[in-house]
Each structure stands twice: as C-alpha cells, then as structure tokens.
Image (tube, rainbow, N blue to C red; front, top):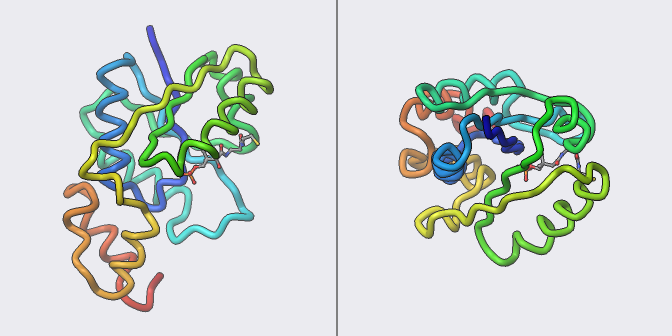
Length: 161
Ligand code: PNS
C-alpha cells in the first residue's frame, strides 16, 4: 500500500490544497494530511478547527487527517511512510521547498519529497489571501471548498480574524 504525507498549515484549507490532495490521491493509496502543531506560529484557526475543515473537505477521499508535533522527518519514520508531498505554485516556492526536501532527506534518508505543481488556476491562491479577502468582507467562494465555505466565512467575518 503506497502512502504519502501531505503536510501544511491549512489555515484554512483552499481549493489549491484540494487540487494537490485530489492529484495525490490518484498516485497514492492513502494520503495522510497532517497539520504540524507550531505554538510559535500564529494561526487564525486552531489546529482542531483546521483538522475539522480538512475532514469535511476530504470526505470520500482516501485521506486521513492528523496533526503532529516536532520534525516531519521523525513523524514520517514513526508512521512508516517514505514520501512527503509538497505543492508548488511558482518557481518562488521552489527554492525554499528544495532546501526543505534536502534537509528532510538528511534527517531521514528514507524520506523522498514529491512535488506536485498546482493547477494554473490556483497558482495565485494562498490561505493568507483567503483570510485577507474575508477580513474585508469579500467573497471567498471561488477560493475554498464549498463544503466548508460557510464555516470559514463565519470564523473570518470582518473583525474576527
Ligand atoms: O503550509 P506551510 O505553512 O507552508 O507548511 C509548512 C510545513 C508545515 C510543511 C513546515 O512548517 C514543516 O515542515 N514543519 C514541521 C517542522 C519540520 O519538520 N521542519 C523541517 C526541518 S527544519
């Protein structure tokens, strides 16, 4: 059984993330979407909220939602998974992700990183953009999964971010 880990902040999940998840599901039997717990990094949604949104958005897909503390390289080893998935939106993502891939491989020599280029219609999209649009009362429907849109909107109403 081919399993892969797709890590990310998912604060909140966007259609760009969903595009990568769907395409990863075409390659792997199970995709473990994991939200690293990083108390130092301020997030608009709590880890539990982000996991719940992901659970709803990925219903029916061969996806497991999880969270993890510490290094991803150790998390992958603990779970017996040798593949990390990263989405790439542009060349500007590449330099940092390439550095992370080499670092993770040094920390866990079994661990390979597979890059999935985001579909062109989502190249511009980021969670930060969604938060900014919502905080000004804009329409986020073109950017987030329909199943979780109302929950995201409710949490990101102007003044609530
Ligand atoms: O969606 P993001 O914010 O780009 O995700 C970044 C993430 C979660 C992949 C990154 O912060 C991460 O890998 N965190 C876990 C800590 C770790 O293993 N770092 C790499 C070695 S320094």
